Length: 235
Image (cartoon, rainbow, N blue to C red; front, side):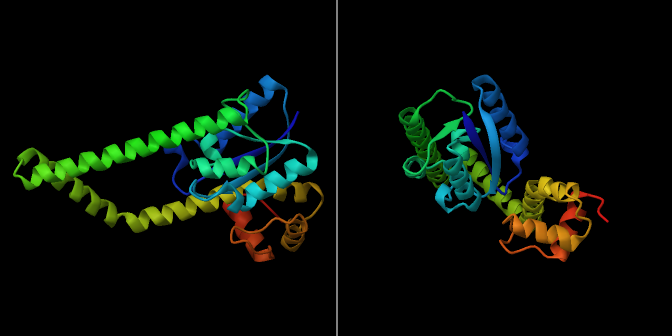
């Protein structure tokens, strides 16, 4: 069976979640080996899981490629498609997909898993809100332990606010690095085809309908920045 691999990373550090690109590729590769799947293409989105799959440019490309090739879309884990059961249900109406960590699950089972996962998240969220409300009430009633916890929480928020701009910058750098990796193989392919100029690579990428991270066409300058970020030696 032919499959199209779809990976998604958010703008936060993927090492913290264990769902970086390489981890996702490993999951899919293991499932492909076990099930005899042939991976014919790979697409990567850098987007929050709150964005519907049908609103993500690379996911749309992945679905179209799978449809044209008579292939199945495959993701590493269900939440790489979405954490919203409505998003997943909507996608099921447009495309068939498999989950590498549950390769034998059918559409009905995946829908149930998604619904249960969402229910669990909502329960945990409400439990957290209730616990915080209770803590605040005890603090207002003079509970010293609760007051100390509130003070530590507030201090932590202030500290997080101080480092916010640095974190935002780091997130942008990480996003740029992730995007660069998705284009790396295309740049190498251009080199293998004998293209030796930045303008030539820009034309090659544009002909392949590959866009910059901002969705624009490539220019020699944007190619130059990209190869520098990747550390590729280019004439």
